[in-house]
Length: 69
Image (cartoon, rainbow, N blue to C red):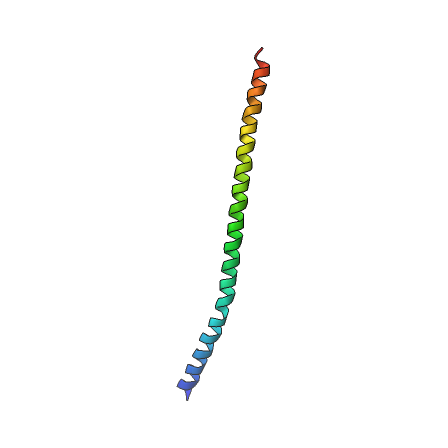
């Protein structure tokens, strides 16, 4: 009798534990989506920084050209 009760309890615990997996899967997918969005934002920022660095370089050259005479 006790063995049957323990077996039933073990089955119930394993069944309820399986129901939690879809929530974990949803969280993983959400995190993967957020990571992808963050990577896209980082790439956009890197592009903007590179553009600003090029413009800054050009402006520095212009300043030096004005200061030479």
